Length: 238
Image (cartoon, rainbow, N blue to C red; front, side):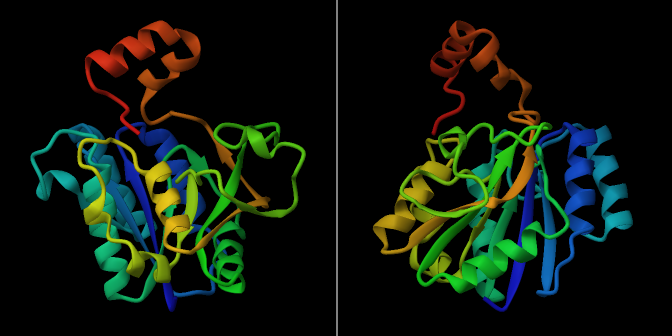
């Protein structure tokens, strides 16, 4: 990997997204990098705010409405487009979702950690709440803080680096277009292609789960309604 392509998929929730953007662009990164925001049919008002932020924070805004008429979520198109760009520029692909705030050294240390580990497919930063407690989706790592864990469990894309070698080995064009989210599938594909995945519990990032898609909070507040929406409307296919 000669550089990093950092991406943040966005669907409204702009105030929180701007915190993500500010943290990413304020990172202490010595590796060459480019930052892309993939705007997945945010409202016109929020799209305008993203355009203003692009000038202030110097990132590339990709409006998916210019590429497709398919309704949100368009995570598959985002991943496929980002993979092609990363491979073309010999870059690793670092996904930071819009409900995550990284620390100043997170991204550089994640990049370095991936380089130092042979056959690394995915390097993921652990997620924590405001109190610093490991939270969704990595509760299984509680009690194993301040380590680097080789893991067979899936790596969430909250804050994860997909190495160039892995990007070259598995095409995202093979992913199932009937699904909405792909972190589980891609994590398993990394292992199936002979790579190792690592969870860096020494690199905590603040995570506010599902802030960009508030309806998913129903999974915890009203699970019956969540699963009714999930199965009747075909939402949240993993």
